Length: 274
Image (cartoon, rainbow, N blue to C red):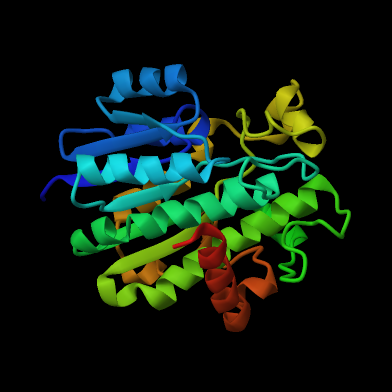
């Protein structure tokens, strides 16, 4: 088997770091991305990966990252879109967007589109979006994507972005299959990690000892990502949402609405200028 290039975002700690350490090997060119330069460098040192840093709250950072990856490799066999978290919906990014929308959906959408040619060059590539069971709390409303007019609990706003992760995977499955690009979305489980570090509400529990009671370890949480990455561009997973390893379980019905999926792609392309 020829060497594969695997790109993992959100790889400085948590399930992304575990996936990087597990997938690293002589047959893999590993590229990892994190927000913290020091943490990402530590994972790179342990895995032999190429490390890049990027803040997904900045589209300029994402565009720079895509350029760096394109300079590093002409093909991407597996892209694990794992960066993200739960954020105070009352904030706003430097690009003028609600943080959950930009960091969890728009920036991964932008990065993946900018890497389309590298994915297509692999002759069979897999894109995996880390979603969440929180998708059940969401509903995409195109009249108020930024939650400017509505007040919703943090978990609901986060849930919309996680629903969008599933819809984006479905969009790739519909639009890019002719290029040999397969996509899936996955809920890894509630993981005891730094996932809630930027949250002022619901995510606080992830910064207390309670996380060890309600959540699984990063090692266990990373297992579905690792399984899919090793499986690669299998048509059987194309457009599938996995609740850990269970296909189609606990998925918001709106994720299956082809009209909403298609419109979300169009709107996301407009918002990211791709």
